[in-house]
Image 1 (cartoon, rainbow over the protein chains, first blue to last red):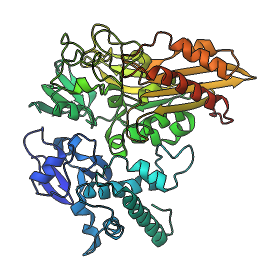
Image 2 (image 1 turned 45 degrees about the vertical axis):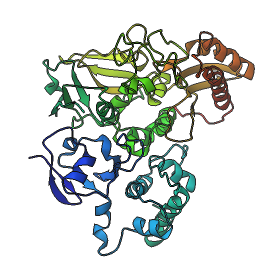
Image 3 (image 1 turned 120 degrees about the vertical axis):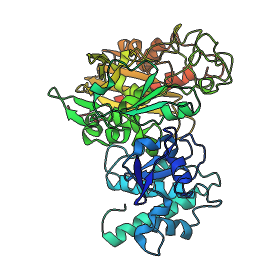
Image 4 (image 1 turned 180 degrees about the horizontal axis):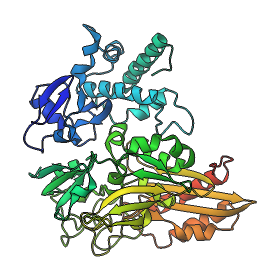
Length: 175
Length: 331
C-alpha cells in the first residue's frame, strides 16, 4: 500500500489516483486544519509544507507524494510542547486574521517563506543583491495567500515580528 | 476529474513505444491537475515523470548552462549562476505565479502550460483550442488579455509563460526525446506555434515527445531587462511583457535581442524591432521607430486595443532602461 507521512504519522493513500493531497488530509486522518478555498491554486488556503517546501496541496495528487513528509498547521506546534509555533503566537498577538479561514495557509506559507529567505532565495522585488527581509519582500512573497477579510497589514506585522524574534534569539539574520 | 491510469516511471526508457498520444506526462502538475479538474484535459493515462533523475543544472564547456526539465522554477530563478549571468531569466521567473507554484512547477512544465483564455477554461462556451471546429468565443467576447500579433480567425489566445519569453530572448535550445528514444535539438523559439487553422496544437512536439533539458548559451553581452505590465503588482499574468538584451558600444547599438510576452500565441521574438535598432544610436526616436516597425501588423479585437500602444510604450521604456544603465552582465 502506498503511504505518506503526515506530521510524522504514516497515512495510507486512497486507491483512486484522482485524490488530491488536500482531500487526502481532510478525509483520511481528518486533519481539517488545511482549508479548501478555490481548489485551483489561486487562493493559497491549502498551503502546507511538502518535504519542507510550501506548496498548494489542491494541485498535487496524493499518489505523487508517496513516501513524502507533509507538515500541516496541526503539525507545526508538535515540536513546541504545549506551546503554539512562534508564527501562530504572532498571528494571535497581531490579530493577523478575522474569519480565520485563510489563516492555516497563511501561517504554513509564512513558515515556508522564512525558510526560503534563509536559503537566500530571491523574489521579484529582491533585485540582484542579497535578500533583506522587509515589508515589501513579505508582501511579494506572500502574494499566493489571499485574505478576503483584508487582514494583510497585521499578517505582515506578525511575520516581521516572528522573523525579528528569531534573529534576536539566534543572532542570525532575520529568518 | 475523469478516471485515469496512473503510472510512475523512474527512467526515460520506461516511456516506451506503446504509450498512446492520450497519455500525459505529469511533473509539478500545477497546470495539468487544474485542467483535469475542469475536464479540459482528460488523459487516459498519466505518466508521472517527477522522479526521473532530471533535476540538475550543469555548466557547459562553452559558458552555457544545461537545465534539466524537472528543475523547479524556484531552483532555476535562485541559482547563483542564473542570477549573475542570465538575470533576464531569473527576473522573468520571479515575476510569474507565486512561491507555492514556483516551488512545484518545473522548467519543462512551464513551457507546456496552456493559455489562460477565459473561454478555453469555460467548457460551456465554444473554443477551437479545446474543441477544434467549435468556434472562437473570444473574438467577439471579452478579449482584454488576448493576442495582438499572429492571431488567426480560429484563435486569439496568448501564451502565458514569462520564462519562455526570457528563453526566447536568450536563444535557449531544447533537448527533446521521442518515445522511441531519438533525441533532437530545437530552439525554444520554434517550440510554440501560431494558431493558424490548428489552435488545438500549442507546440510542434510530437505525441510522446519529452522535453529533457533546456540549454542556455553564454549570453550576448549587454544589459538584460525583463519588464512586465499587469493588472496587479504580483501574481498576475502579463498584459504585456518585454525581455531585452541590449549592448551599446560607442553610441551605437552593437547587438540587441527582444522578445514580447502577452502579445501572441507564442513568445514573440521581435526581429523587426531588432533590425531597426542595429547600428543605430540608442535614442528615444529610434526606440519608437523600432517599436512601430514590430507593431505595424498588430491588430486589436476591441477590449485589447490598448495593448498596441502599451506594447510600444513598454518596449521603449525597457530599451531606455537598458541603454542608460551602467551595469553590464559579465561574460
